[in-house]
Amino acid sequence: MSHPWSIASSVYDKQGTHDASKKDATREKEAERWRDESDPEEGFKLREKIIGGRRTFGLAVGRDDDYDEIDMSFEEDEGLCLINKLKMEDQDRQESMDKLNKRIKRIEEKAPGSAEHVRLLRRYLDQMDEKIIKGLEANLDICLRSLDTQKKMLEVSKNYITLLEKLAKERSARIIYLEAFTVALQTKIRKLEGEAPLK
Image 1: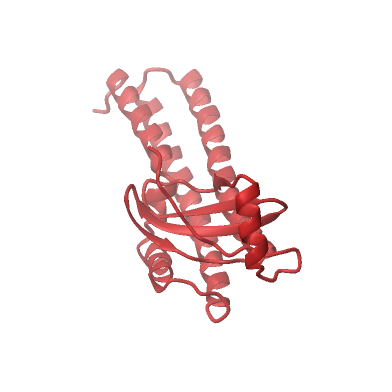
Image 2: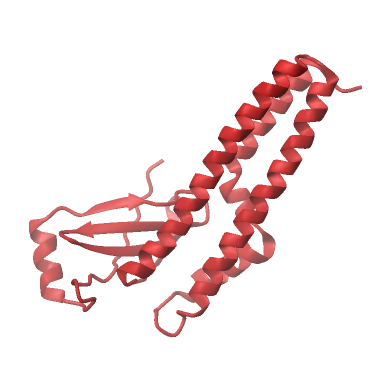
């Protein structure tokens, strides 16, 4: 589903200073491009907007048409730092999925269609889940500390800070980032239980 995000971030020139005239001229002459860096069903989105040779970064909170726009401006290095953190989380999740699939195949080869098959898989999934969650919590804490040092410099919506603190407190990041991962695991478990239900 497409989301009608419309974030008005400030534009900075190469020296990092705002230039409204360049902003207006560039918008008239060149196309604007948004790229999603994170697209969970609910939570936050980080988008990079490229206009000419300059980059701006915007953050939005919400889902579907019910969302809260947040106007944030980053120097390029700060924005890229946060983007890279999200990219690393995506990369870690994909690597974990690849390792999981390889491990499942090895288990299936060793004990196909047996109760031991299901027990081994469940034990592995528990270990993998715990490892990923610890990594996500560590990354989230890093983001929180980074934002905390910038509160006085950046005009950050209090709602966004509250959301991040809530995610850290309730560990809702587990639901957001591991949704697809969890669905895949549940599907595997149901399939295996159908072939070899535990007594």
